[in-house]
Amino acid sequence: MLSAQDMPEQQAFSPSHTSFPPSSAVDQTVEALRRILVGHTIADVERHLILDTLAYCLGNRTHAARILGISIRTLRNKLNEYMDAGISVPEPGQKPVLAA
Image 1: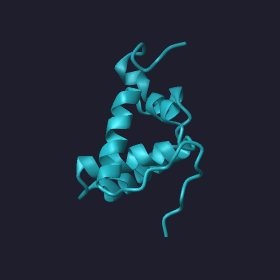
Image 2: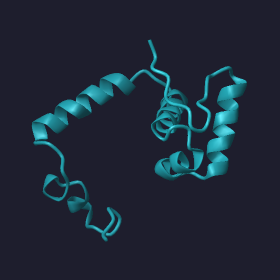
Image 3: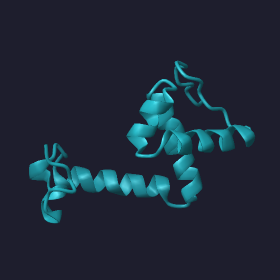
Image 4: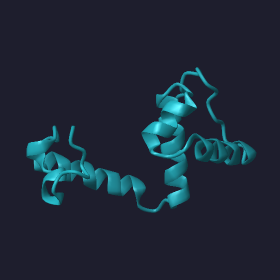
């Protein structure tokens, strides 16, 4: 199986090699993401990505770390930092809590 690293750069993200919607929809999605991300610190974006991935994995730290491409130790250290700061972190097996 080829990975994006094995493919020539111009083909790695080409719509003909992925299931991306037509380019105008991709452009709209990219623009929406920019509006969401701009103005937030990298630490904030990282925290949200980690916690959302953990919630997606129902609290499974090993699975979340694998998806994020980080070690389980790094994930646990980040989660400990968040808990020390008073941020709620889902326990293993816990369903995600929807923000109001």
